[in-house]
Length: 172
Image (cartoon, rainbow, N blue to C red; front, side):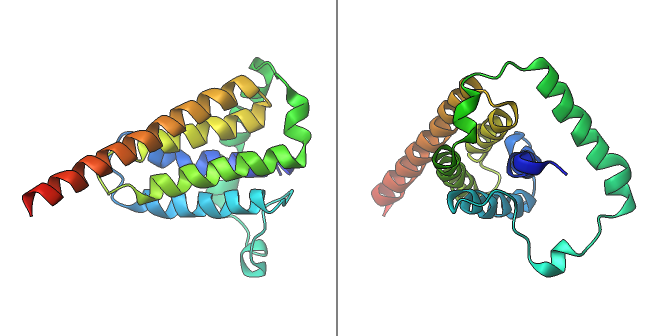
C-alpha cells in the first residue's frame, strides 16, 4: 500500500511506542526488535518488506483496515503536503538507503538493549522515528536531526552504562 516507503511507515509505527517517555512494560522491546529486522532488510537492499508466506496471506482485521490504515495514510499525506523535500535524489539511491538502514539498525538495537523502565530507549527510538519520517518526506535536514537525536541517545546510554558499571566495580 505504501510502495517504496513501506519500510519507513512500518518503522514509524513500530518505534512510536518506545519513543514516548512512558513505561511500556516491555512491549516496546518486541516492536524494537521488529524494527531492527526491517532495518536489516534495508541494509540487505530490499525494496519492499519481506514477510513469511504465512503472514503475507493473512488479512488485517476489520479494525485495522477500517481505522488504523486510513489514519496513518491521512497523516502521511498531510506530512507530504506540508514538507519540503531537500536532496530528494539521495533517497532514491540504493547505497544511501542501505546506509540509513545501518543507522536505523544501530538505533533499534540500542533502544532494545536499554534496561526496562529506564527511559534510555526514548532518544534512540525518537531518532529512528525522525529518520523514518525523513525517508517518507525525503528531507535530509530531518534525517540529520534524527541522526543527532539518536546518536545522543546512544551516547547517553553508553555513558549511563559506564557510570553504573564503575559504581558496581567500586562497591565490590
